[in-house]
Image (cartoon, rainbow, N blue to C red; front, side, top):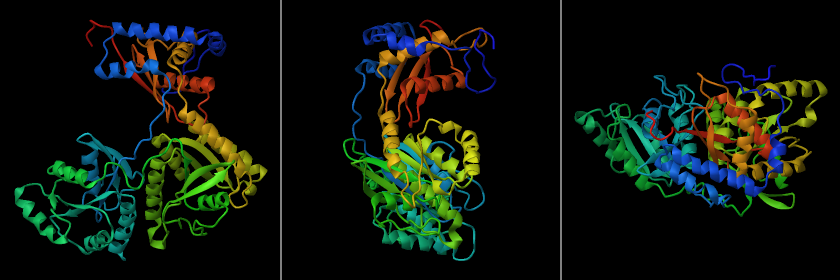
Length: 512
């Protein structure tokens, strides 16, 4: 390795040459010195072209840590209907981007189930229902059963009907289910591309859900009126989420693939059998909030084992387990992801971990059934962890047995560590002092003869910690990963995801 910093190709993490004394220099620096340095850097930003929202963000930089107020969970809008009526296309139209899976084969919606959306300044969550298994036997009843699970977590429902086909037996089954539920229903008569087809929509008045909105999800026709009606029907905040109180019991989502032992662990922690436990995977139909005393304190656990598994609903069960997981994460502060230690880490395990990362929640990984792991399996498991879980190496790990309760007491320090990190704010002076020393010791590699500089940094929020760097140029992904790693090494952040955003700004008077 030469005296210059080594950097691997592509997006691999930047690898510095040699050691540095960043930690020592930070320790020797007083708070006053750090704040003075940050103030100087902040003043230097006056020479750069800043945007309006930059100013709003920077005005708060000197305030330091503040208390995050309780925040309501946005209301939930479920999109239901029989297969291939255009539900996912409508979801894409609502959220304004192509995220939901759309394919000209019925029932392709699988893993991703909820999306953040905004209309006329109001935020809400859209739940896209699907995940049914194509089988001619009893299909209409099965679609209705699965749609019901989505409706249970929703504040309002958009019932999508293909206006060009009209009502079918499957539609009727969904209608029967919707009539039993105490939820506002808005009918979307889809595939109405012009005025001539609007007569097809009018026939849906007979359903008794009010005006059937003629829409074309493909072309966007009528979607604005539909969303206006949906917003009017929804409360300001979710009736099924509510506040996550800062001063009350911390809220924990217990997540993992079916049959990994979530219900057994919750029963062991609660000291009761209130939660349904069965050898058949996915027997928990609804999330059960359970107040549990651990370490002398109350915690609120949400069990998210999925839904009642039926032979003909295998894929649907996994799909709605994802729906329940997403719903619980919305209301949680920290997720305990259960993995089955004797079994190989699966693609589904990794997918669930990704859901937690996407949600921005704190994370603890619990390896269950540890009493069944022999020396060979432990060696193999460490290899799997290095290979499949390297991206969450920062998460606390506990080895437990849900069945016997072995090591359940180790959950509390892991949860405390993760939540403390999730709540952490770094004073702006200390953050800029750290970055200044780090960049001086390990500058960003030259790109095209230029070297991007970090002008100023601020932590814009906690829960999870999010940082914004004002720079003179784009920082390589590998260099950003290097900064994140060193942030963790210097300030802890064990058990929480970190987000770093960039705002590339040019000197005044320069043309872009």
